[in-house]
Structure formats: structure tokens, C-alpha cells
Image 1 (cartoon, one colour):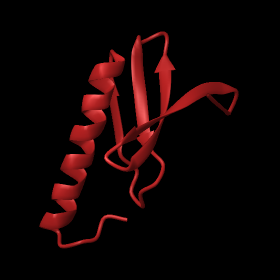
Image 2 (cartoon, rainbow, N blue to C red; image 1 turned 90 degrees about the vertical axis):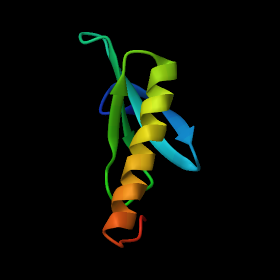
Image 3 (cartoon, rainbow, N blue to C red; image 1 turned 60 degrees about the vertical axis):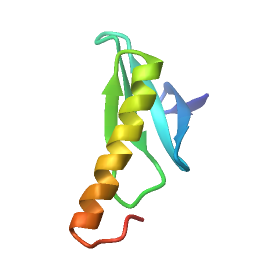
Length: 74
């Protein structure tokens, strides 16, 4: 667990990348944000398993977008 801005967060790993995860109790939703890429990629879901899938899909979309623009994904 990570304490950031007085909020408890945790990390998730997917395909060699890391994200910070936070749970919004009011909305009953998990929010994730990458921490190891130049661009910020966000994703959300209502369960941990759906969050992992959303993370993977967001990474896939990001890398496809970078390839389309012929830019490197840092």
C-alpha cells in the first residue's frame, strides 16, 4: 500500500508496466493511472479483475496509437 495525498493506494503490474490504483468508495469504482510512461494512461472498472483487463486494454490502445503516429512509447 502507498499513502499519497492522505489516500491509500496500491500498485498493479501489467505487461511490464506499473500503475497506481485507488478505490472511490462513493462511486464504487477502481481508478488506475500509469506511472512509468511518458504519457498518462488512465483506466477504471468496478472489480479488480475488470480493472486488470481495462489496464491491459488501455496499454494495448496506447501502443497501437503510438505505432500509428510512428512515435515511441516511453
